[in-house]
Amino acid sequence: MSERPVCNYEGSRYNTEFWTAERSYEDAAERIALKALLPPRGRRLVEIGAGFGRLADLYEGYEEIILFDYARTQLEKAVERLGHDGRYLFVQGNFYHLPFSAATFDTVTMIRTLHHAADAGAVIRNVAEILASEGVFVLEFASKHNLKALGRYLLRRQAWSPFDEAPVEFVELNFDFHPRWIWRQVEAAGLRREAVRTVSHFRIPWLKRLLPARLLARLDALAQPTGRWWQWSPSVFVRLRAPAKASPPRPLFRCPDCGTPLGDPPRERFACPTCGKVWARQEGIYNFRDPLNR
Ligand SMILES: C[S@@+](CC[C@H](N)C(=O)[O-])C[C@H]1O[C@@H](n2cnc3c(N)ncnc32)[C@H](O)[C@@H]1O
Ligand SMILES: [Zn+2]
Image 1 (cartoon, rainbow, N blue to C red):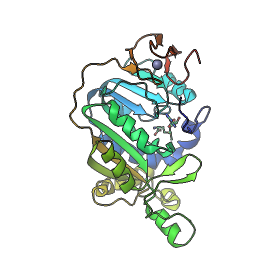
Image 2: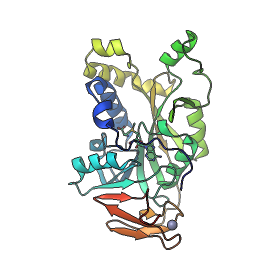
Image 3: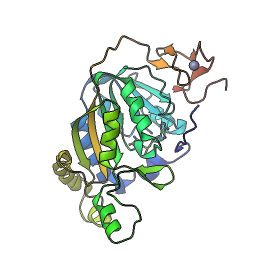
């Protein structure tokens, strides 16, 4: 399958070690942005790189909610929390090889995940393909064009320039992007930019110690709409719209390896009639990452 490298969260304690009380402000600010940009209701939504489903409660207005991630151990945590609710489907796979048919989602979200894409343009094109006619993609990306990076660059504490439009890999498989570079990728994928919010303006350790997270999040909410004019924050949220397209009914799943339509859930197994790979549901998670017969 994919030769492109993947940032593997398998076995990571992302839910407890990253999302501590110290990040309450970022969590609250991201929820405000996502709520403002997400169509509140719809038929089918997928979050690509959903992790343990931190943001899943914001998707409650949808009839079918798919949490998609590469790491099985992240999805197992999501199953523990949300598996009792029949609206959720848990799907394991790789964003370079989505196991979904073209034009099948009203809404796609991707938060803190493009950050790990060495080929972000390919991921954006893949999302554009699975969006239904005039579907919405709410994308968050980490921006290299932020005030802290600017300060560090001017003080010569950082080698890379926040003005250079190419993505920067500051730690292996962790990328920050220039907004203009992202705008070019989304345009090339045929998506139209509808609204932009800059997020986490106050991600400054001493300020976070000084002021309560709720107050900072409220101030952030006031600053977020300025993303329409300029982007100087470390995180940017954008609502993108797919063009009108013919979308005949298709089964939800397709073979991630060869693209052959496979069928709809619920089913225990999907055998691909073209490449012969067999994909299975294991303890509530559809595994489209590792076929049963390698
Ligand atoms: C920082 S976490 C974000 C989780 C969630 N969206 C949130 O905001 O809490 C990034 C997630 O992207 C997933 N991921 C990384 N590379 C991926 C890939 N190639 N395909 C699918 N998911 C991937 C990781 O497994 C991880 O759960
Ligand atoms: Zn196949």
